[in-house]
Length: 252
Ligand code: 13P
Image (tube, rainbow, N blue to C red; front, top):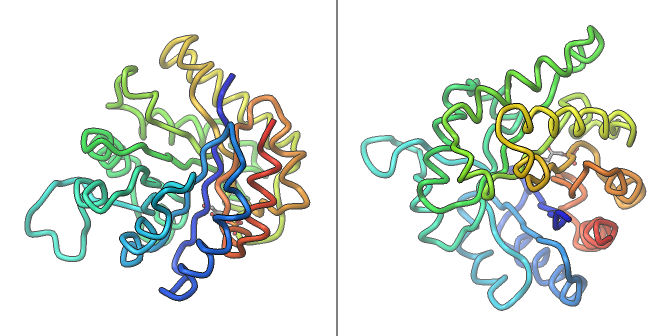
């Protein structure tokens, strides 16, 4: 049985006072929720603040990105070791906004995954197709390419620290979520792919989150699907009550 995992991706939305009220609002709402993992992923500059605010709670902290080197002349970049140093447990890698707005390639994404794992972080690796790719029947092949390239150098032994997030790009921030059937189909495809790339054991254990317009109203139907093990939540993670409702919907 996989433990559900719900993470909030705050993207570039919060400032310091938002971070404080969000975390202080969320903590009491989820303090007695058991049997799942919870994380929030603030912008880099608020990570330390949020790590401090979440101490002694069941909320863990992740970053939204990292670089592929530990140290050096890489102006503007942040090393995974630095994320670990400030108390992060997770890092999101390969989000569609980084792929499509910042131009990140599968090759760079793979290097980030490997580096983050070697620094001791857990990785949330995002994959997902564009609307025109779905409409032309390319969803599975796009997702397969992103997975096989993104995990190319990732050994089986490290897969216990990798969560996959299926985020169809057309469902992100649009209010147009995938139906539970559409999401489940791709999640099942991803799980079968894990079996051919790795092993039956890894197939059973790797968690696959769904992301894309997850709201309290649709969260339960999505997360009740057999291969959906939680959610990566954008907009609805910016309000403590809606994020808490999604977290509670993930408890089996
Ligand atoms: P929304 O929940 O706002 O659609 O964003 C999803 C997402 O991109 C999470 O990483």
